[in-house]
Image (cartoon, rainbow, N blue to C red; front, side):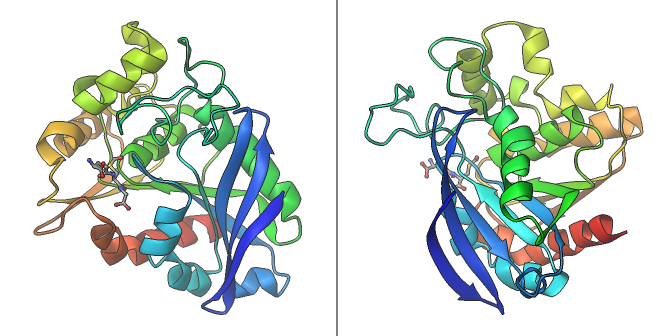
Length: 284
Ligand SMILES: N[C@@H](CCC(=O)N[C@@H](CSC=O)C(=O)NCC(=O)O)C(=O)O
């Protein structure tokens, strides 16, 4: 691990690290916020944040204001990039000209189809390699095994599906403006066709609405959604998650906010409540 940025923030430190990912076969960057408690040597739980389409590790750490909340609650925050990367084009990581496929659009799954399958393994990266790396590199500052998961849009899809697919791995989960049913909306249908092929069962295994019915763990979901979100009716469709949770008896707190759009202004407005929700679960 090589530290490429560090900034004092709210008594803690916002850092950016780079490492060679064996899962993805490329260098990866991640934002790591260490709250004052961690810098003082007190082991802290970790909130993992998954960003949306077009994002890198920078969007969340520079736009959301997470540092103030994490400092207050004593949480480490880890924000990885959203896909494997190959800016120089020397590693064989495929890409697509569109913003919603390829680099910047990993969809937090392990691709099974050519040319994506070799590098696009974001599920294994987020669930296995990244926590192992964080818990070993920051040993003494991290409470091993105490993890929460949140994200936005494509990252909200990632948070919901990874928590549902890996029961026991995360103490809590939340999402902002998530793609709740990728099998039923254009962003998801395009990505799933490319990454997973045309097998409906493979799609269902990465679709929060489809996963809810058979969930092994009824981990409560906290979801915030802006009503002025430009993607609400076409790509996000929170009413499908509401119906699936009602049918399965899965606990869901879905909050709709008049006037809020899809941007980080919305995330910043309600992020403090998400961090408090995760802190309560992680410390309980
Ligand atoms: N056409 C837009 C779409 C990209 C966009 O809105 N990205 C969102 C996430 S959307 C779902 O995953 C985002 O977080 N953007 C970064 C930001 O800092 O706001 C475009 O190409 O910009």
